[in-house]
Image (cartoon, rainbow, N blue to C red; front, side, top):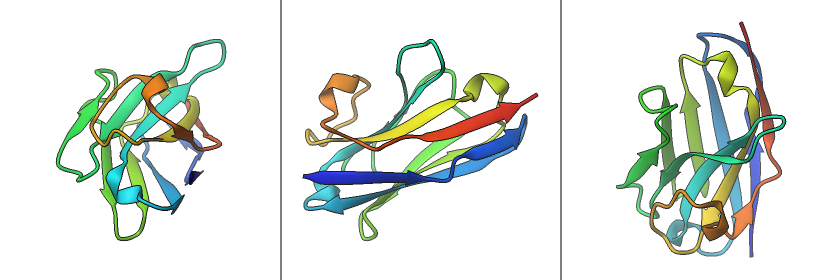
Length: 124
């Protein structure tokens, strides 16, 4: 069992930055691939970024590539999402998720554990 707790959401102006943290409790965090997803009102949950268990492989949605950076610290059982140059269309609830498969994947169904979500609102 892995429990995930996100922090770092909030209100920011367009062009600003935020950094999310996702702290994991439980065993074997370092063997899990981690992902970030988001869901805007009235829309389906969409993939944002993912990182492999070792941190050596990352993948981003086209809409955030070059602006967002995913990283992890296995010693701290934490994964991060640095978000720069935020746009109003980035407004959503952001979720971190853990995939026991260990490799990068964009498919929500392959993530077994999910955090509770944290709201980001980007004003224009």
